[in-house]
Amino acid sequence: MADPMRIRASMSGDKVEVRVLMSHEMETGQRKDASGAVVPAHFIQNVTVTHGGKTVLSAQWGTSISKNPFMHFRFKGGKPGEKVTISWVDNKGDRRSDEAVISGG
Amino acid sequence: MNEKRRELLKAASGSGVLALAAAAGLIKPGDAFAQQWNKAAFDTKSFAATLKALGASGSTESAQIQITAPDIAENGAVVPITIESAIPKTDTIAILIEKNPNTLSADFDIPAGTDPFITTRIKMAETSNIYAVVKADGKYYHAAKEIKVTLGGCGG
Image (cartoon, rainbow over all chains, first blue to last red; front, side, top):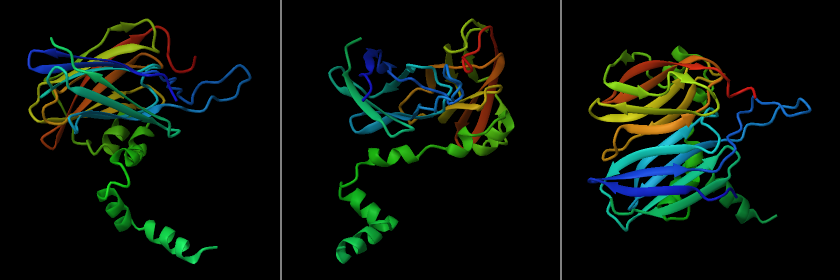
């Protein structure tokens, strides 16, 4: 299981600003190790962000998202104290889900 | 071998049973979402082929899509990029990197209520055009920006 995500969700006017930093190698499958063997691809394929049972963002990723992926976006309809949940699944079936409480602006 | 169990397994492979199981809450929607990965599109190796795989071949260039990224990236392994669309009813935003081994980098679904705005960090193998492809109200639009890379981020 990967390390927890670092999520910051805060009000900005009537919108919730979400910033998330995930902990993942995001191995491309192009790189070779010291012995010349190709390091197999290992990367996050799907990301879903939910708030109050509703998906507010979902994404499909390829191998060219940087190591320890960062994402920033905003959505309407959230209030301070409510939760935002972020989940990912990688190409090996590993998954992780973390949540954060929306803070006041 | 238990015959009943065999039959159940066989029946369970039918999608109708899976749908029922999902409706009954036996399978969480999250369990299925790993399969919603557009392998055909992520395997493409050129701008035109990726557009085709996304169903976006008729895409038109739009000044209403803004790509914010450095003109020169010193480290191709971490290139910050922000895409913002001013096109009404923007549904999806895809990021394409023309000269990477695989062109498609990411495809974001933007539900109603979420701003058509996304920032992330991408890897670039070499100096290349970056395309933002937006689907809005059933039509496709794109914008491009060239980013010069002084140190590639894919070979290592």
